[in-house]
Length: 175
Image 1 (cartoon, helix red, strand yellow):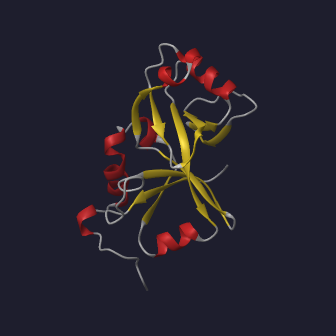
Image 2 (tube, rainbow, N blue to C red):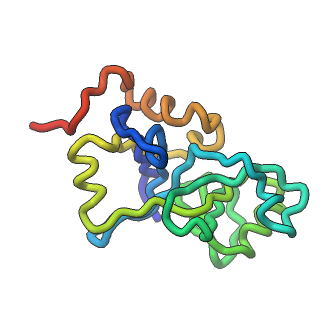
Image 3 (cartoon, one colour):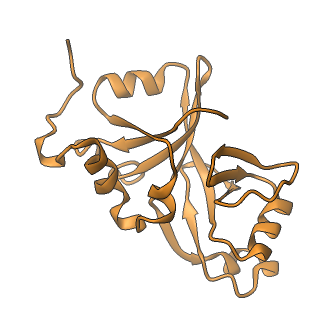
């Protein structure tokens, strides 16, 4: 993957149990649809409670979205040069491989084990964005994931655009 990272930031007017207040790392968006991972929804459950082989791993598991919560994605900063990892940008790699997850845990680097994902059918994300549900934020670096606490990612992503949430009007921008 090349180019900047794209984060979808939920509009202040997007309410709901799953997507209200979320920041989503967009992994794919093309004519067939889109998919991404919510990156500001840690669960209270540590990784060690999900996997017997992860004893001592007290990092939280993260809710990545409502689609296929049995599918796990590992986000981590330092590439390990393994077959099943994808470098998104320098400082951010992703893999759904259990082998890569084990290697990342053994490496001692920070990581996020994200369960499930957010998915959109063809044209759905474009339409939701057109009506103002999502604000698109592009970043060349992944510090939003590694340097900003989860509870602050939504407001920080908007701040980086110079947006004050209370000034956003409902609905999409029309020219």
